[in-house]
Amino acid sequence: MQYQCMLGIDFMKETKLTLDFDQKSLIIPDDQIKQLPKVEKPVEIDLSNTKLGEGQKQKLRNLFNGFKGLFSDQPGLTHVLNHEIYTGDKGPVVSRPYRYDRVKQGIIDYHIEKMLQEGKMCPIQSPYASPLVFTRKNNGLPPDSPEAYRFMIDYCKLNAITKYPRYPLPVIDDLITNIPHTGIMSTLDLKSGYFQLVISPKDIEKTAIEQQRPTSYTKRMVLSTIERIFDPLGLLGPIITWAKIFMKRLWLLELGWSDELPYKEEE
Image (cartoon, rainbow, N blue to C red; front, side, top):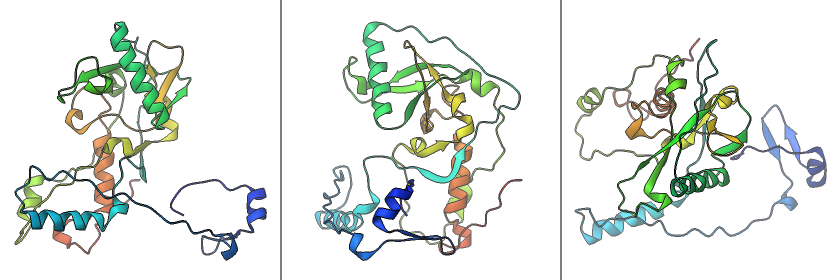
């Protein structure tokens, strides 16, 4: 199945579902399946800054619309690996929330409510607490607009007690050198990439944030952005987890595009 779910016995009896544990499959009677037409909007892409001709632009639009199922405005979740926060016997760490004026506190409330609705946060009682911060985006919006700010967490204290597993990151120069006879080179930028990374259930309480409300919230996904991954703000470990995911699921050039990179689980 494409989505994780829990099926109750009453539901399975009513719909006459059959579980085949040997084949790891779910058998659904034909009369229980209702086909609904799937309506997909055309993929909207901005090609104004490209040097392509009109014919090339149309071919590119047709290509994107031929794979509309691959595009989404909402980030998904990867279950290849969960992000773990190794603190050993250290912790918990607690920081007092920073003070903000009424306008900025309203901006914080806006982002928290938005993330709660999107499932990126949930209420929690935790011995850990890290303060909220936000930085101004370079998007030209007025200073009183909530979307003019990037919502972040100050995890300095948590980072200080965290042990990071060593994992080699690809060397960009080596990858470029190993690309023979390349006609087109492209980059892949995931939409809200770190929001697609799930924190291990045992470590969720460590990501709790503290703000001017009686309830703390925890993050289901990592909030650090790639621009600030080496900044003391935000979690510093997700880039290692992302490297493991990419090295496990993507293909390296020296192995050929059809050969999957061998992967060895850590002891």
